[in-house]
Length: 295
Image (tube, rainbow, N blue to C red; front, side):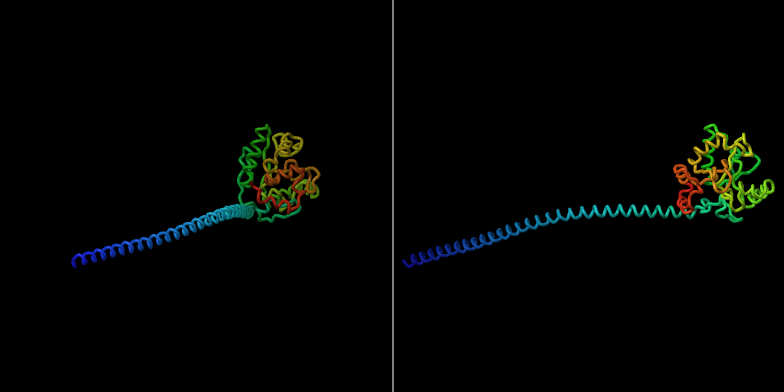
């Protein structure tokens, strides 16, 4: 009997322990469940916040992209402007370099206006081949950068059936003095001054000026103004950078249809287009063409 009571008490105790264990486990489970639910809630909250943050970031990125595009366009425009400035500066530097390398005397107005001293001579003179000259036994010199233009002119004139020949080119200060002295002796000072420059005032000293002739008028120049060669020069010489220095009714010397000076294509073209002569322009206007003289 006593043993049975003990067994029952042990059974009750076991049952109570089981109930307590189960209750404890259920409580722990509930607590864990609550913890998990809380974690899920927090995770959902965090996820929602993350989504909100991402949307904000995307909107900001979109706005930044628009701003960046504008900035890139502005930078591109600025770069292009800088590039244009750079090219302009480079062009100005190149022009300045060309000007510094170009003898400014070559576009000065002489003929009783400016004076070349007795030591002046162009830096680079070359001989004109005898196939282009009147007197095959005489040496004619020309500025080396003028020669290609003169050669083209005479070659094209020949192609067009002309018979142009160079009868005078570079003359030094001394050569001009001797020539003027001879003219003065032969014709008198007054007459000589009407067609011949004093030494230091002759365009021939520049090495950019030539006198043309043809086999018909030879070295007298008589009748050259009526020749087909002169008409061809009037119509075409400007295309090669040459202009007549002393046209009819000029203020310096008698009409010299044979006397042509190289002034560069651009100036010769503009003079031809405007119907003007070299000595009609001011020196300031002429100086603007120095940079383009040999272009």
